[in-house]
Image (cartoon, rainbow, N blue to C red; front, side, top):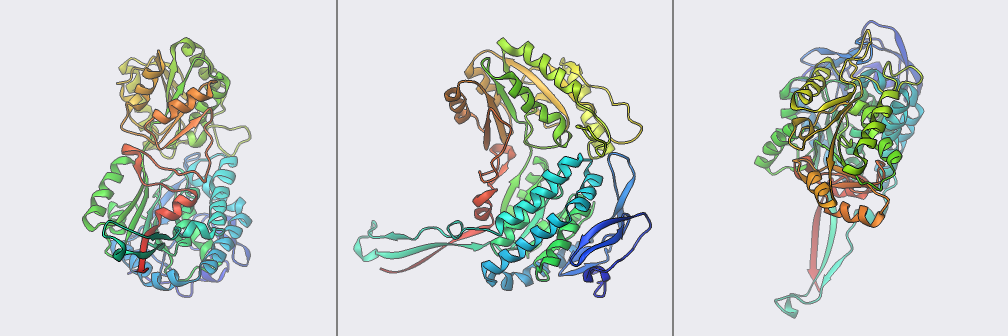
Length: 519
């Protein structure tokens, strides 16, 4: 394995420079210190900051195309070492009283809040998020998730005792029975690039609260924020090996984190295609899985809907993470009587949005994550044209000197079999398809391989809930795109396996054990 930095001053909260570049402020255990914005980040394995075997790759700011920092490239052996460290730490951590684990999570939350501005600046530099999004929805949500799982109620851990007083075998089989939750073990957490704070926190915090240990493999586009999260957890008192972070662009990094014999569960957020490959590997050794995969959310808008509310909700596809979010209402199905009005209002809404550097005041739409992804999104817009869709607004690259920008794009007159309607674009692109009656709207919404979150807009609340119950999706928003973070989150069909958020995340990262005794 690579060189360990047992005397690394970063572990003591001292000033350190490991690469050129202007200094930026960031917090640490004993206050603030300076680190280079271009520092060569090390892996976090077994409580040590480890020099990567595979060198480094540059992390680019998608808004400016400048280098943010150098991310480490782990070798397969280093990933296996991280998994082994998590296995070694599991026994003691799982036996640590829940209150002590909770105290560590609470301290980590406090540290993240105290360092919100520098952490958000890094997240913004890595992802291109607007300032408000980086602060509130990235770092802010991450801190809130650690705080939430530091306050787990006892009822969330246990299952009420069940006494079987008489079964099919008669009174002789009367037994007492207690069902309890046990941690799964070592959990590999593989996270997506669109939110390097909230997404990993949604995996790490409940997994640690339940007594699991974790190996985190962040996306190669924005891994530096996840290492800052590891620093906060280390400073909060997480024992060595309980949290490990390894990164790299090579496929073998993720493969090693999935197929390691030390790993009991894989929690993955990303594309359906990658999730399917992970599922195949997990199936061979019966590893637990939690998969939050792709989405192509349908927004079913009825003629009696509040169109202003519908437009504002659907319009979040253009702005929130620049459409790089699986829960976005990207596939609009609108009843024919209000079809023209909705298209007109969506076009006007999209045309008012300021596209540009996310650090500038008033910017609503930042860049997508990379040049390659911009080309992918643009290729879908061109495909829509060829398929016969009308480009109502957008469709051309914004006039920006630097950065990977895509204009908010509205495609109307879309048929249900068009690829732009059926496939996840993951950018600020919305398609609009008309329907005639309720049954047709439901049929169109369900005509998808995906089923993560759908949406219904109608002034008739009874109808809205009736339609919601018929939609084949893990979640349905009624007259809103908001989410309740205590509600179960996950998808039907190709959108995933399992549920998390709230108490459901504790269930996801635990096994149910039954204990029986003579009655």
